[in-house]
Length: 116
Length: 117
Image (cartoon, rainbow over all chains, first blue to last red):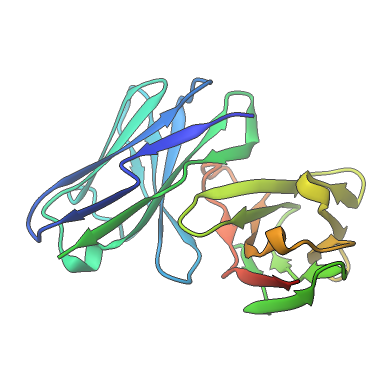
């Protein structure tokens, strides 16, 4: 089956620093990728849709200047949490639908971000 | 608007017994329904989906779900649970009429399944 990877799997950083999270589709091309945030024991909330070659689409309430998204190629999207604060600590998950199979998303393993 | 409810925070079942995880939904148009499973510190794994067609959908790892339009439900079932089925299960819905991004699924709060030996 299709595989989506994320790097790093976990990261600890100091408040005020920026952290970049990568999402890669390993065996298929993804013109669209999605970034979710999951709080402990809670469901996933869509943050933004990453579009290859164009600007990301952010959900209401998500600060685009804080959560920078870049879809550099058909297999890579990055989420940069800028000037991270402890409230940004969360589990970040990306997903990608295979082209032509929009009804089925393949999720990455997630990245645990802890901001001290 | 679309919403999904998983009424049980946790389901406990003995290994070998039937497992049911409940899900009800609300959408304006026809629903697209999904079940995902999440193991600790892992992303979601797709189990099955209902888009159209037969109300009984069979998925991965022996799971199945039945779409019931009159009861607006999409309960997940497995005839004989395994200890390895212990995980967090999410139901998700998408309104078939929406033109929103395909990532904009409405996820339920999740149900923790605990299967004891």
